[in-house]
Length: 116
Image (cartoon, rainbow, N blue to C red):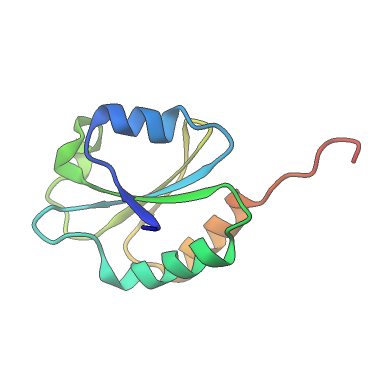
């Protein structure tokens, strides 16, 4: 099972990211000419398997594929976008493993039900 899903269209982005409530989605935005960042894949793989009981998914997308990512086209530093409940929560520029770890842990935590 692939732990990083490649986003290839706006309709897929809408279905996977905007219309999936309760799940933290971490999206790596990269340039098609250099591909997804190999340095961060081991961090994401570890988080994916260590936190398999949490609603968490990882994605990758070439910036040129989606018009909404036009601001990231041409930049050689990867950008990581954190979405939950259809809203962008965070943005990390560059490979910053400690920040990525912290944000995944913080935003993927399952909240206790009120009165529990």
